[in-house]
Length: 211
Image 1 (cartoon, rainbow, N blue to C red):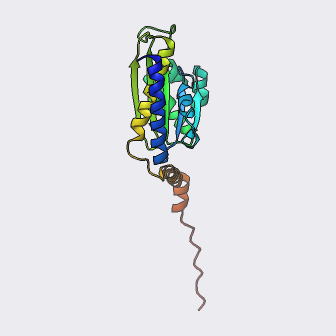
Image 2 (image 1 turned 60 degrees about the vertical axis):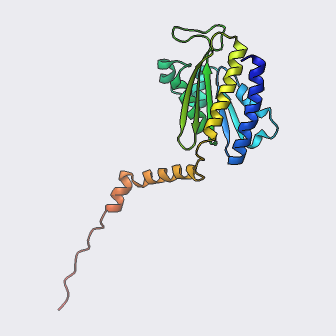
Image 3 (image 1 turned 180 degrees about the vertical axis):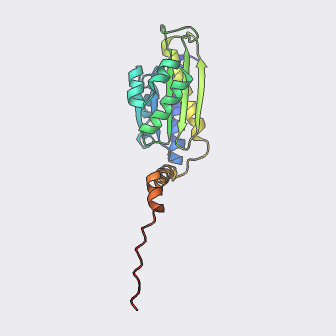
């Protein structure tokens, strides 16, 4: 797939995704590293995308991934920025930091440099997290096809993944309230409140009746 083909595909996919999300009342956030905001750009290039796209995080450095998305430093140190674990953490972090239904993440090595043993140029990890708990990961090895081509093909892959998840079961309308309700239940079950609820007031001494 050439760069021009990828751009054509990304525009068609972006339109399809926006139409689907609009009909299902789904909103999206993006978390991008190697693509530097190209996925958000492809989506917001379509007029009327504001009713679906909420925000995009461009987290190029490890510090940005940690500060903006809450990716644990231990995850980045142990597995590296370009890994399944980091991609999943980025998607979940975007979902937690934005009031949206779907979040996609991309982290990879676009080249021409940056390759390490086991992680060649063209390696890209993707993840999509949904508000209802679904989360998917995909790894692509595009090869040394040029920086621009790796980035453009990554945009296409991210949009395809979003489409697949958006076509799945529609999240329950009260999913966010359910989470809040669960929080209240945990509070209600705290030891302090439980002890208070079981506390029996002391009995008053019974005065002898006068005869």
